[in-house]
Length: 236
Image (cartoon, rainbow, N blue to C red; front, side, top):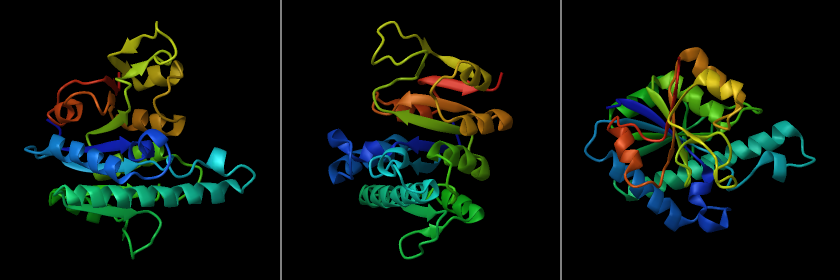
């Protein structure tokens, strides 16, 4: 069983079928899924959530200064973190939002030792604001925060994709699923797991990654119990 994990979520999980914005019903359902999966365990849980349901720099920021577009995206992740915090606390789970961009009226500033103390006290910590600098994805933020807080694994949640495939299974009926890979395999085969900076950081530090279907029956609870689900990526 894992002691401390970091769960990476896509912002689209909050949007529902529209793919845009924040749907309170979707946020509530997501929160319940996480809270119920963690119930009865001692797993310390941190979360990084993306902002693609609100802003994508490459699309929404076309023609805009790239750094400015990225900062707007970082603000979007704080909005998502606040929405998820509200839903999780309504589900009975004490939660803290910590932002790399200081906005103390709505989120605590990110301080590594304070984050770890929240986790030790049983609170879920949601990291918003990326890592505070442009040109880095929330994938990289996930690996960075996981290493900083001493998480044992990064859980990469997907929507109806149950692991890593050699090609998109939604487009190719002959796509082959991998049960286990090394970080080097992901780099050499150019598999779309996370961006190159993030996967390299995991490889350099020996941080395992699990790619799994969040909505698969009991998947998150099984992962919290240390069971094998999805595709495991680890050092050779």
